Every structure is written in structure tokens, then in C-alpha cells.
Image (cartoon, rainbow, N blue to C red; front, side, top):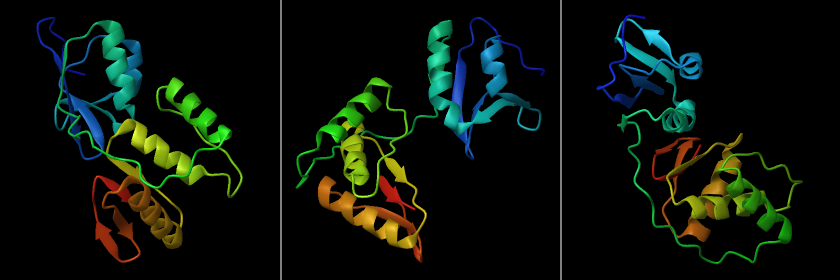
Length: 169
């Protein structure tokens, strides 16, 4: 690793082909487990799913950094025609929010996982990619999102290739 961290240089976090890149990093063992040095581009590189971890770690370390990876724009989603949530859905959404928007929901078929996801997407007001295992579920999810969030929904798969702020694939 030839790049050195200068105290006056901020880290610059960018997005490139599914990865995070930064030409400099603070000397930190945790960050070094997430990033590897890419000698071709002369940057440190980490999987994009580490974005939040890296941002939080920079905060803990007091690192000055410039965020060029965050390119999304907040959405203005309105809930429409959503039935009142069941207590277990309210509890699951609250637990997810308390966990910083992280977690796994495990409920039986018909218990309202999709509507819980609609509530979560509405709560964060951010572009969202929903990944499902079948074309039929892709169509069902797109219809549900469009109906309850009053927004156009993109689909990728099954002959569709339309990407939008809310996309199901």
C-alpha cells in the first residue's frame, strides 16, 4: 500500500462500479479490514455495502472526509390507501428504526411483510431497490408500491428494464 494519509488531506469517498473508493484512509485497523489497495487505480477499494459502516467509522475517528458516494436525492413519498398496521407490524417497524434501519423481518405468509416494507420505505424517503425471487412477485411488489406510495415504480427483469427511484427486480 503506497498511499499515505496526510493530516491535512480529507478522505474522499466515491462510488465506482459497485465499490467505494478513497485515495487516502486514516491508519485504522477496522477500515483496513474493509478496504484493499487497488494499485491499478491507486485507491483503496471496499464493497459498496460498507458505505454506512465507513461513514460511521469516519465519525468515530473524527476523520475529515468528503462524501462523493452519496448521490441519491431524498424522495417525497406519500402514503395512500394503506390499511392500519397491525401491532406486530408497528413493533417491527419501530424495532427496525431503533436499529438504525437495519434488520431482518421474519413473518409467516400473509402477515404483512410487504406492507411493512411500504411503511419502512415511506419512513426513510430514499430510493429503494426491492429484490424478489420471481417475476410474479416482482409485478406484485411493483403494483403494491405504486398503489400505496403514489409513485411510478421501475421493474428490471422478465423483459422489463425500467429503473426508477423505487425499482423492483
